[in-house]
Length: 359
Image (cartoon, rainbow, N blue to C red; front, top):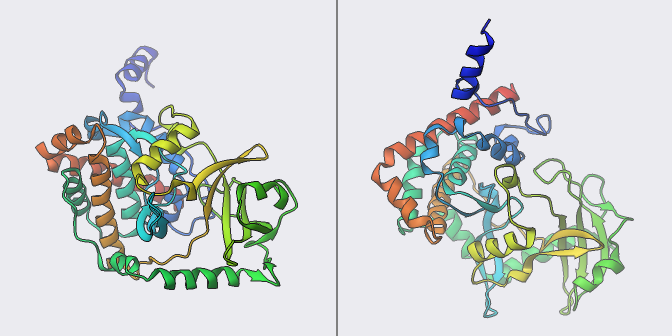
């Protein structure tokens, strides 16, 4: 048994806590694989990251901070129709989920992305993702993968046809088609009358509850609003109750409104930001956005790997534009292999914790 004097010495030297304190993943039974588990537990990741002793050599890069998404993965960056500030409608590859966004270290954002990517595909190489990321940090944009380019080439009229078909499939006799576990009747607040002022120019037809089966927003209220717009087209708007960002587990964050402004500026700078914003309805804060049709899907692991590498490059490009970006890029460029090894060790350790949880 270690005597008290030795124990105190170990504690203050950090040796007594060489391993992270026990953490618990949520939704373990609801997750079919490690990838799902990680995507449902961004808060676990940022709690883990707060103990800098587990980050080891990644600590060398933590001084570079800025606006990050907090939960980067393939599904959170996709192709959707957007409108520029000049009023031009077009398809763009954009970040579509700001729930866990805020301020944090660039290196940990990349490490989180690499971890989820590795959980999804054992074949993807950290060295390839790191190389693409560093290129982005140095202002070099990589060629777009064929699958993403195909999605972006879709004609907007074709997209509108797909969107209309999607909405029609969710309707029956002029209202939502109710189905338990998918679209359920909603008799609470906010109701149709209470949401109407937030959708001027459209008629509110119905409000339904959209229960979540799993994910980081499992505990949030999620409503769908069926609208009839001025052109006579039915549309579905999603209201998703806001939660505190997962990044708050790592460090104090700005107010919700301040974070949204920073995230819009970083990820949607030249776009009409009103189509993805926050509204206070009946005292409840909701993310408000139109329910989109998924037109970007990766057909196999190879396409997923190409997508991960390309998005790593875009992450680097996005971070390079921020104040801390240039110095951070220089630090990594001085010894790229050191950065790669630090990320690889982090990914290996964190995935090991996740795997032990699933076993």
